[in-house]
Image 1: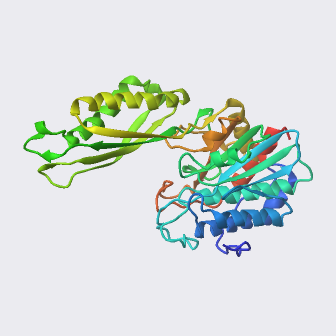
Image 2: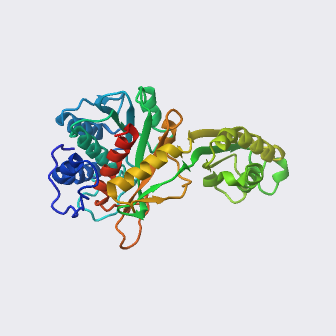
Image 3: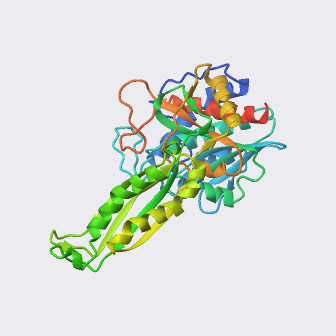
Length: 406
């Protein structure tokens, strides 16, 4: 990955929104908006998987160092970088990793790494945070300290946010913000919400064992496939009666494996899926409840089983003050119509771990051009309208200033 990637000749014409903030933001974007696009395209072309973001980390460190800043590398991958001085500190976070997907777009900057692609917008998140950091560094003065958090491994559970926290990345931080690309919102819009904006997500894997046998004599063995079917339908049904439906709890199976022959009861089987909930209190109660229900469902079948319940990430719960600061920042940065409401997603996001320690908010950045079909994130055809990049830079800068009282 090269630091000085050439400025893209085909970069979109961007409305810099001059006058939507301190003069130094306008000056920086006027001179460097193409750099933000170029960083994003360089990252997009050379994606890296979770905890392997070595070149991505190096690019970020070189850009920040070249601007006179002093980034601190985290163990493994990722880095943090402080700008300004205390007494108050606000953090801005971006995630670095890509997905194990093969890209199917005709972009000139399409992924050059087989089977790896930035189909979730993390390349944009990283480029925007670099832009916000360098813009903030160009300010004559700041009313406090801004910490840039370039986090690894968002796409794996329990998430690289825990790596940042373990490396003291939140020490002294009073509030934290992040933006996530949203292809359902048009460019120029920032979706905000008080309360849960994403859900907790756990992984369930159930492995069953049986002596096996002939399907003509199921009474002489333990019918493993029947037991699997009992859990496949029974566990979601029972959860719907044992958990408050207002919690948004949903169990969906994604994989089931058992047997090869039509006339043989198999000896082994596997069932795997995701369990999601919007309520933090419900999330804490789910594991013992699931274990008791699985035990009750399988007790009459005679099969042996091992249940692995891997707790993933907590819900991202925006506190009211932070959500309001982010909405007002979006409006001040991009105009009075920029901030819009947004729905809660059942998707998981490890930004929730930060909010276990400090208040903060995540917003959704509109990246849809407004023309044609919306290609969702985590799809091989996902791409974004790069006019969203300066919108994100401005919003992050204003969120930091608003939090610091500047």
